[in-house]
Picture (tube, helix red, strand yellow):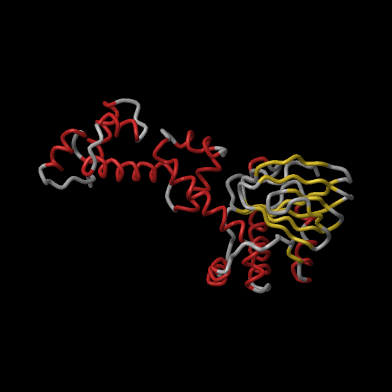
Length: 289
């Protein structure tokens, strides 16, 4: 199969349906095949079946992966690989793990902490048997997506339930770290962007990927969340600051005062100046129900 990038969007996978959460792909690369450093657009695990693969990323700088080893790369990671021999491996892409035991995963993530050095996880015999049974099916032209989902659940179950919690906490630590950094990026920049496309571009994401990540982490569409945060900020500034109306308009990315006024009428029932006057007179102002 072609040696395309280590982490790619599912829509780029030939023969795969779009807009699914879990992807399993079989790869075999000839010795010397080099895949340049690329940014992961989903979380991914790489399961080595055969050969030796050099991987270079922030978590795994220049380590050699061998048979039965697994590594995890969080979304946003930049990864480069080189086949030191003829290699075979399975890659599992996911946004959120399909959990059969959420309590176990919660306990695992509570114990997540950065190890001194990231080391590959070694597949158990049961896990290795599952992984090595996949290539024949995954190499088919149109593998069944429902079957893939079932195999992903089995794969995750064998990982999250049959390794010690401290070992799992270290293995999954990059995911918890990325979640924190993504949240920081969102909170630092949401008030400075005019639309979702600009927000995504600022973070180096495609719009589709950014929407998906945001919905997974916050539970609501990014556009609705931005509007709600802008409403909260505008009310705060009108009531409790002496900022000019023009300054507030610019602060929240409106193109013009008229656009800002229409937004305030729709959201709070009146113009910015009228709202500020009401607040100064002791009248409570808030969102229109």
